[in-house]
Image (cartoon, rainbow, N blue to C red; front, top):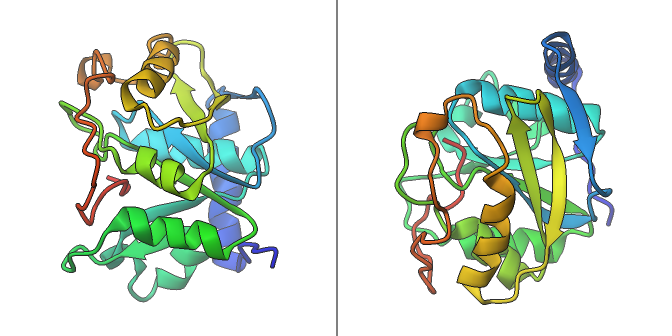
Length: 212
């Protein structure tokens, strides 16, 4: 089954507005390779609310149907239907659920599923990345795609594709080498080294990979 996000008039207005803002503010979309039908896009660095707005405009300008995870309070009436039609997947923070397994299940039951995750989980200062994005890709057997918003170059897009091997530190070193060349909106809030993020082998935190 080819799973498409079916927009309504309100979600379509938001999508077009995001592309308009993205273009009006002088950003250029770049894409190293077409995104595969199933993958996890790493949305980093995440130091500002504008990151989500610009990245949403970016994916829409590249005509990429991407899903994202958000707390369930964002999906209540009257905007819940719009959020889902924009690719949102609600998460109930009050329940102790394994987000990694839940997202792997989503990958297993769909023919097309592109999931965007900001591993920092918040736009504020962070000491380490959440590891859910990595283990979702590993367990679902899908690649990681480098996603970025470079405020120095005003370019946003999709970079290299990383095939996860299970060697967390080696894979993160490849990812880190790329993000060191990307300038976030607030560099002082970005991590200096993502390689040493704690590679928890059994991630169980229900909020792994949520949009902050």
